[in-house]
Amino acid sequence: MTSKPLLVFDFDGVIVDGIYEYWLSSKKACCKVLQSKFNDITLPNDIPQAFKFLRPWVEHGWEMVLLAAELTNPNSGLNQKGYKNFADDYQQNCINALNKWKWNPKQLQQALDDVRREAIAHDLETWLASHHSFPGVADRLNELNEEGLEFAVLTTKSAEFTAQLLNSFSINANFLYGYESGSKTEVLLQLSKNHLIQGFIEDRRKTLEKVINTPQLTSIPCFLASWGYLKPNDLNNLPACISLLEPTTFARPLANWN
Image (cartoon, rainbow, N blue to C red):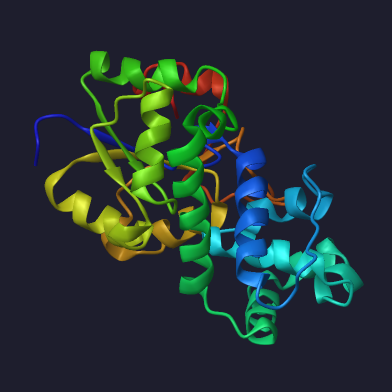
């Protein structure tokens, strides 16, 4: 074990609100993938309500590209049945959509990553400005070291892009793990071998439930960030071992979080 205890933070929905960038990049990636099929693809600059509503269900970036594609097709299940119906069986509806388009997740993730690389290479300032740190979060993270804590950022975004954003917000994480490092439970298992993890902060209840149901990880305190991308029912019957973390509590020393 290292000498300093460790807190682990999700990125999207806990540290940064990037919903505008998600839509712009997903829209551009969708147009790239569809170019060979359609010459006249139009998607709005304003974020569609369906995209906003479904964001809490999204676990990987490629899903956002798929949602953008579904929005281009008037006959898609998303457009025909509505976004609330799509959310009711989100994973299966995504699988159905992938099969219909004859795509695979790797292909869509690559298109999204390429779009982000192009944006960073050609207009970094605009790309960075399309993200916003949640109020007070950056300053609070940088105070943790004064409390004798280290912190890691664990995200399903590429570590490459996350590092750019952390730097732009002057957030100095001790460790950074992107989707390239494996699933969140896999990374937490590796970290727990050498660190005393005193908290995992996430805005996806499903992810937290995976952690508390993984035998080797049950000792990790889990916190659901109240300011994140929460589903309408995420606060209902919250398991006792998952604590709701409010901004006022987050501002306090770790010993006062529970």
